[in-house]
Length: 340
Image (cartoon, rainbow, N blue to C red; front, side, top):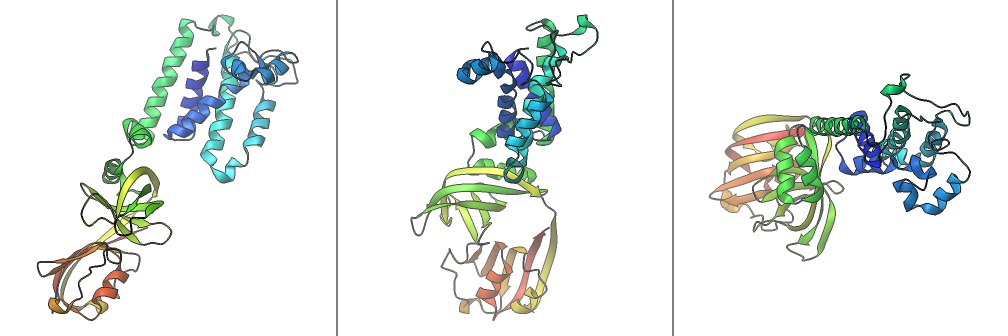
């Protein structure tokens, strides 16, 4: 069986079996599918690591020890630390290796699947139904594997095969914004950023959760410090991104509640709001002239003052209380969102 067929079958099995569209996980399965053939110098993988292949070829028949459940168990044992580090990669390695040799059981020569027992596993029982390398039947199997991979990846990523490729190779703030608009209501969206802080001119590197996405800016929360930032090219952005890598996180439920506020104290109102909430809207206060303007954008990145109103954009209750605790709200309309 051709190397490309092994790889295609391993990728299809991993995409379906692990319900993943991660291109790195799928690539790992494709690479792992080549390793059973290190027992022959005529294979692609055998030519790459000739010294080991030559050693095995001199001692074991082709499609024997490396094409067995014993070898699969050994590979699983060697990859076991990945169960705690990155389980999908563990699954891709083990499944890719297994599919890589088990597919050869459908060829005319079969495999010694139960090594050291020399009996060969050959499927199916009818010799005429077994595969020949580079035969029309093998190309049909290859095409089917590619088709199943495309279907599985699109279903897993909600129709996002192109989206998955974009996240891998064309990642920027716009990609992150598009991902948020598409999946933000149901999944957490994370971005890994390298950039420049606009106020200190220091380099910035970290992981953030996207809370809101506009046409040119993102409002994000540092996953470690829980501080809010505005990222983008706007005049009030705190971070200018250089590299942005977006990814989908855990499923999330967003509960939103609308408040129409009239003649209520800021502190009194905020006691009714969950402390992990994000608040957006406009407030008119009783004496706006006495409110200290939030000139420090690093401290208040989601609160703006202008035209006689306070504008909130996914602000934390703690920020609002810190800035406005002594004031009364004449009127205002806000949306309070809580993620669970």
